[in-house]
Length: 193
Image (cartoon, rainbow, N blue to C red; front, side, top):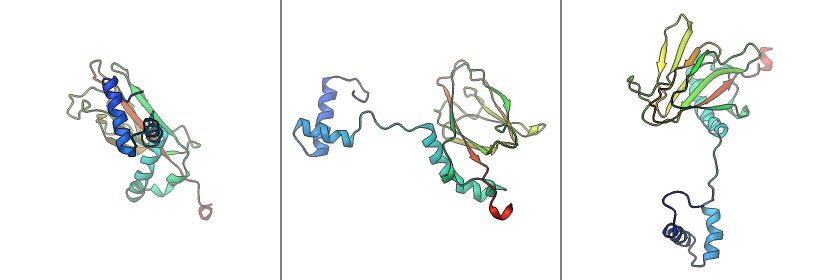
């Protein structure tokens, strides 16, 4: 399998030449064997859970330093993967208002949503819809709509902030993607029992 482009004999010749150059070998079989170590085919896949764990680890210290009650969160190294990748096609209806918390036994404490989307999801109202709408104090609080623009990260209290996803416009040029992950409530320390 070649990795993209037009595919064809010229592409295969170029790939072999790059392998020979990278390995310093003129032998076709030697270059191919070494190239499988340097250039795996297919390349390793990153799971949504692995990406969420990387982001959780990087974001954890930031949250601990800035959020009240952040000391209630479990340390990131104690997590099993708990991530969700959502894809909304053009014309998708959105998602009804809800909280990311199902009662006292639900360990989710902070919800984080990362948007790996392209440039068409603008903040100026000219985007493709799919906004995340937050109701910080329940339905009576100030409504805040956030476009799912690329490289945006939104974090909020899972049990306190009701939120919804608005419909994606029919003419959206791509799917609306969102990687959601949760910071969980830590176990009470033995000193606080």
